[in-house]
Length: 68
Image 1 (cartoon, rainbow, N blue to C red):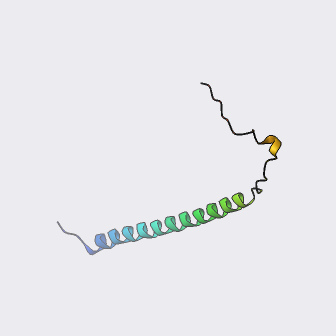
Image 2: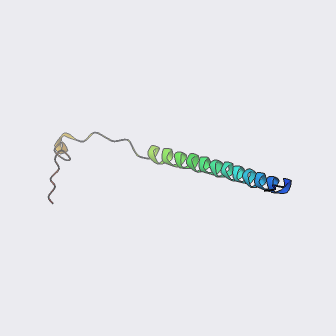
Image 3: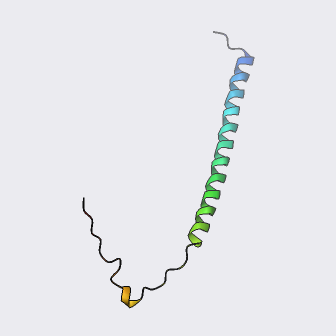
């Protein structure tokens, strides 16, 4: 079996291209995660602070009645 220099070079080129493709994919994934994290932070910070419930409504939300 004779392996020429050109076939070895071609195999190395494919491997190099795969590494570049992997690096690009990881970079895109990291950017998407950063954007998602920023969006989630903005969403959570946009929720208004909870106010205390008046004493007349203290009974609301204390019980859960579920039927199947």
